[in-house]
Image (cartoon, rainbow, N blue to C red; front, side, top):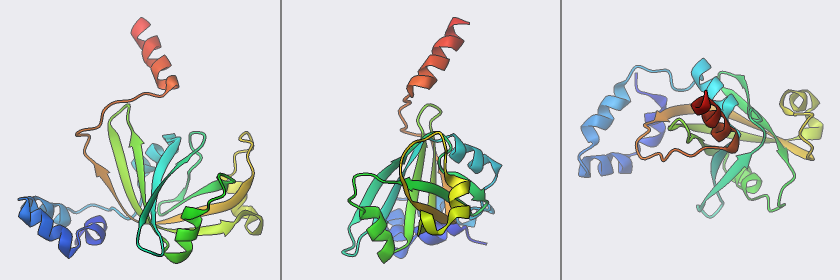
Length: 188
């Protein structure tokens, strides 16, 4: 059974590039791996919960890709079940580029980084942007009462596939809290 992630990403032009650069046989093995990559396990759920931000790519009406960083307190992106993620979307710079793009095409690519531990997770999903006031039960699941910002929408992702990426070429970086923990460990 082919992997869902490679089914979505290894298009004909990608396969041609893999062949040209000598990676097609390796990619074919990846396609045949017997892994569940359309439902999150505890490993992915914990990783996502620990993040305080991620990158989201959408595509506009004209075909141009758009990348945006989404951030908040650790765990602001909630894992609702093994195929569903959601977060409270706050009022920002009021450009609404991602929101507008999602009205045109609901497909997104989500990119999660853990620089300190050199790990990354890529998720392909479909997004649904919902008015927060019209979905109070969902809003209760995703809001953080300690984070003061005006919630306008709830963004819900239905996962199509995911893939863990190798740590190669990830330069370790640390948040201030991570540096403090490293210093405490070194002093002990």
